[in-house]
Length: 412
Image 1 (tube, rainbow, N blue to C red):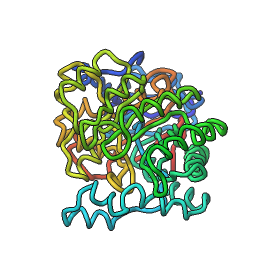
Image 2 (image 1 turned 45 degrees about the vertical axis):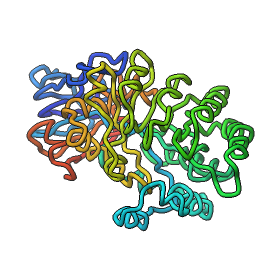
Image 3 (image 1 turned 135 degrees about the horizontal axis):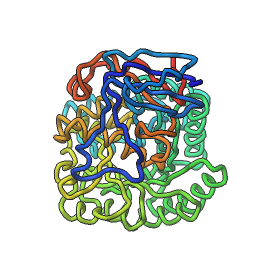
């Protein structure tokens, strides 16, 4: 007997027999949708699915949900967030409105250093409780797996505190959480860049590894922050402790972050607002996933990553939220899909592939998540009644997620 049976699904989205690799280029326009479908779940995994007329009369379930007029999607996988932070920074939002740039705000003690000061003053338990609110918020909008970075501590003790909180979110919520050590996010007061690099390399990385707190290592490779050489040093040091690189690349300038990411074997290079033909060519044929963060580009009024050029070159593309207090104060993945369609000119099919299948790859979760595939974990969401898949990005800002299911269990 199945644990859960969903019947009369208007469209079962992202149905694939297998997912051996992410999708790229023209294949991103292909989003398999099964009409008038059913889906059965057993022991937290997808047991069966197909058209309603093929539903076996012998298939019984402990709980049945009718999804008439509704679509069922695999849960979103958000592969880039800074979900653990002490407080929002709406005062800097006002500064931006009045014309201050990201760099000017940082120079006045705002930005990352502002978040670091607030985080250091906050006890771990309070930081957890504040972060849990955001974790439950993204779960309600269809995200069932998320990457969470450190980077607002900038001391060994506080970086560890952030990563402990991120790990606890994975235990205290239904979310699948992957963690990333981002000690190289900014240079804190009282340090030269070289003295801080030594701290990251000689103290922080070993301490993070000793507690097994991070799956990945990241660097903000950007002018005024960390250079290509710095990035490669940190990435290589993290790899020795089993942390695979994922790099903040080419957000504000042609920083060389893409080149550093590919050279270090990074699983992803994220942001990409400032890339051209050289970076696109370097990414071709690699295992590094280009990841766009349209919420950050939108919020900072930066150019959007050149998605159409990337797909024309045959590249895959992932889309994540960059949920953080300074440059993308939203973890709403349906909104990110809307921005990707409106501002990056992706089709709805391309954007949904980018936010499910390809982000699952970018978190080493493709074998379990990102598609409706037999045997994968039953991480799903059911929409409210909607006319089509395209309505999800079209109705930007609307609340279209009705029911979230994680490991076959309906979330209240």
